Structures are given as structure tokens and as C-alpha cells.
Image (cartoon, rainbow, N blue to C red; front, side):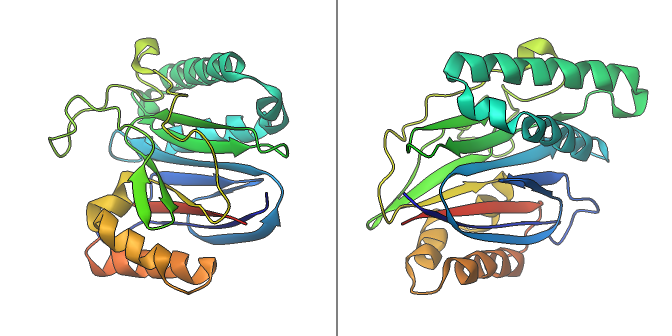
Length: 239
């Protein structure tokens, strides 16, 4: 399989700081767009910093920096190996925040997808960032938001990086069992679907524009709807 990737992260219209970070292959972004074509592998993550102030951005950057440093190792590991390394990153973040009082309590969500050259893949999720798939005319979520009560907006997270060792429960068991040609996979911070309905995102993905144009239009639409939160999204088109 070949993958086209188009991604963006944006501060939104109300926040003073972008606490989101995205990792696309070898690049970590805190703003703007990034587009790649005809990739034989996929290594993509969205981290949505939590905690308020400047603290969330510290955690999201810290976690993605560590994942990028271990990119080649992650591609070789099985689920138990990835779980162990994620726990190690979490513990390192906790130690870092304890040694820097101004960052104490910093935390972040993480949702990502690793697809290897043999098309073997693994999804990774902690928190309320999301992964969706457009397949034919169906648009469905494949991760579960790890919050206390999904029916309540702003419900507290039950899994995230930072805070306490017990605050991380990495979910490697999404409902995505196989990847099909023509799938479009969406990885996003909750800011995207807090400003746009799933049916609105689906409509953008199903139009005849290029993936880059779809990505740009999603951000434009989100901002036009208010975008109270930071907005980050990675589109992965399977061809």
C-alpha cells in the first residue's frame, strides 16, 4: 500500500497557546501544514496537551520528541514492547515535571498509527484525541475516548501521559482490524470534532478535491465555526 498524508495543527480562535503537537513521519509541528505523498510506511501521532497555561505544550512536545527518537525501535516492536516504551516515556515525563515545578502536573493525550512496509499496523490511544475512518460511504470512529463519561462534554480524562504513573492506560485495541485501499484515516485532537460534526467532516472527505485541499478546507471550516480549542488533524489516504 501507498499512503498520502496531509496534516495541520492550529491554535484556533480563542486560545493564547497551541498545546497540540503533531508528528508526521520525521517532523514534529506546532503550527501550519505538512504534506507527504507516496509513502510506503506511516508513522503519525497527535498529542493534545492538557493542564492549562503553558504546561500542556510541554507534555505534548516531550512525548512526541521521545517517540520520534525511538522511531526505528517502535517500528520493530510488538504490542507489549510498545506498551513498555510508552510507560517509560510517561515515567520520564513525570520525573521531568517533578524536577521543574513550573511544569508540575503537565499532561497530554496521544493517538497515533504505525503502518509498516508489510502493511502490518498498530493503533495507539490514550485520552480523548480520536481516530476515524472513511470507508466507502461510511465514516466511523475506531478509538474510544478515555474519559469518565463520554456523554458529558468536558468529562475528565481517565488515561493520559503525565500526572501520576496510574494515569496512563495505553489502548492498543482499536476496532480497526484491517486497512483497505481508498480508506481515509483521520487522527485528530478533540478540537476538530468539537467544532465540526462528524457528518461535516465526512462531507469534506468525500468530495473530489485533493487530500491537501481537503485538509485545508477542514481547518478553514473549523475556524469558521469558532474553533474554541486548538485544532490538529492528520489525514492518511490509502492508495
